[in-house]
Length: 398
Image 1 (cartoon, one colour):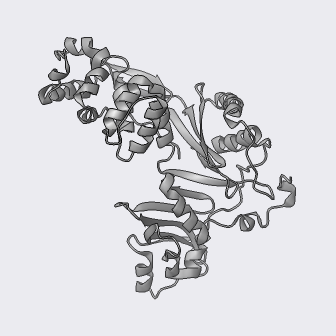
Image 2: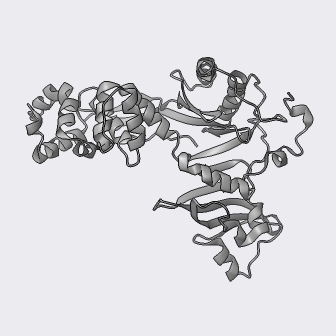
Image 3: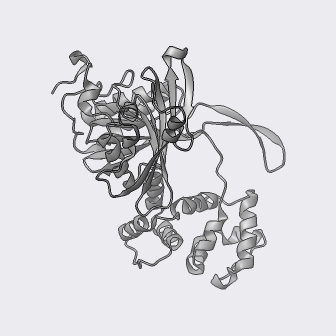
């Protein structure tokens, strides 16, 4: 699913992470508004703890804020997160800023914002495109793995125009934007679009109730996996998925029927859990994986009037041992949740698999080893197996 509409709340605590030198420069365009709110800041020395407390209260009140300030603080909050240092250092070099490896993350974000705010916006979109989402795989209907056409960034202009016309026709409004991020032999797209119109009762600054008509802004993410020839799509509705499969195939691969958004081949299977048992959790050659667990498994029993069962939630194989330990051959495995503990990370990463073609997990740089593990265990099915049984007439033979 794409993001549903949800209001954003300011996090002024990010300002406490910024050194007073850069914080004063960040606030300089808003000093007149601050003074009118009783917050007189003439120099860096005025930015003491008491002033920051009062500033936080004024920002969290949310009324009468000057244009641009809420958006700027929101941008800093999203780009000053732990683990952003390397990306911010890279952006600082692009902005031709002199930096030190030990510079605080928030200071780097402010300096880039003051010099090139568009770079910080691009970073936020890129990071947003990597967070956990429901991603469905659509296999390229060709004998060989197709390669994208050249000059993809330019071709995204034609893709954007086709999507804009399609969304407008389906009452998604204007404002469609395609943001392109290159990857090794592939690409990632962040697509902005409008949701359907809705109304919301709101309280204005005069404490009067009025009706606000709005079209929430949503982002979908599409990635091309060149190792398997899959288009990975995050979208709200089947009509959106069909549009992405058709127009990305047409504009970025030269074939509008390359990806089947209606009845795609099966790409994920949980059958290896039944076939391998607890061996499904062995790490094998993957030293970057410390531990794999299968937390929950949902089954459907056709022989028992499609009764749904859920094994877990802690350890599926412990639960199986309590019931004499095997999965009925007639049961269909509908949904499984794994967790991966990667070397050097404290948290366990959840990975949810929903056959025939859906998975939910972080898509950051460290996720590659998880994808390789899923491929090794054939939870991510081999391309040849997915294509088996597909009529040759549907293939885009090269």
